[in-house]
Length: 177
Ligand SMILES: CSCCC(=O)/C(O)=C/O
Ligand SMILES: [Fe+2]
Ligand code: NI
Figure 1 (spheres, rainbow, N blue to C red):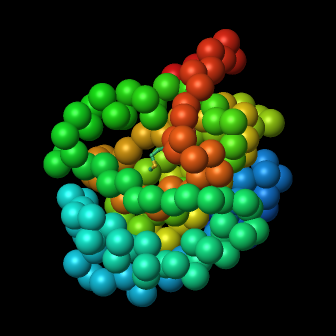
Figure 2: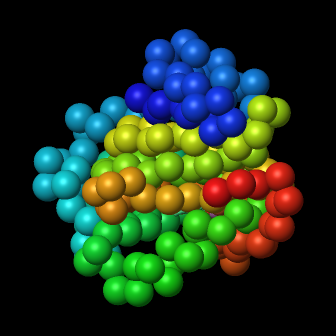
């Protein structure tokens, strides 16, 4: 279950109803996938072979295709980030600076955790994600992504633009770290 932290007030939303209505108000998709479908091995593995990635995509093929049909996605893949990821810090630099995408960005967390910090009506808010959480970042919405203490996450990514993930840096004078 995702938790929300509103940065300006440090207010936290943890109850499902409050979280879903807050995200809905901001045009952020929020769904939940059944993690019981995923093998125990893959729920705690952060260095993935191509076969592992294929297993994740086939396990959630129905959920992926449902999202793709509803939101016009054409391609999807699996990204795994952890201390075992070569050039992790370089990759994180791309994600940790405020940026926008020219399509809405859907991420489904299948292992580990991550935080999407998204610009909203009351300033930036953190969406703290756990396995099973599926969210979108609306098109052209300033946001960034950080790992949590455990520095590990696996996510299914869905794309409309066949060139995959493209981040456009966004200088936001209103953003305070
Ligand atoms: C957990 S997916 C990696 C983060 C990402 O793709 C992105 O665009 C963050 O904003
Ligand atoms: Fe992004
Ligand atoms: Ni992104």
